[in-house]
Amino acid sequence: MSVAKGVERVSHGQRRDRARGIAQERMLRLAELAAAEPDPDRARRFVSIARRISTRHRVPLPRRLRRFACRECDAYLVPGRNCRVRLEKRRVVVTCLKCGKVKRYPYP
Ligand SMILES: [Zn+2]
Image (cartoon, rainbow, N blue to C red):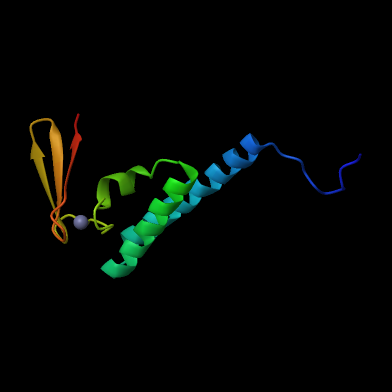
């Protein structure tokens, strides 16, 4: 049996890897859009779409969203506007001022 011209055969693994590449690109773009968006509700929308892509394709969220998107309410966090950033001993504490969720990550 021959394969139709122009139809590329790909394995599941290859298909998944390609989807992951595209997923990554889309999440990065959404992170940019969220960061540049003046309307907080629209920014939240970008964050939640990015989170869905991350879940669906099992690709980690881009760092910018890992750090500055609230896990609880999906707000895109802008220090001084809707979140508080404090340095503690060896960790950064980011508090969402909308829902109060606290996020901590280590440094250095
Ligand atoms: Zn929140």
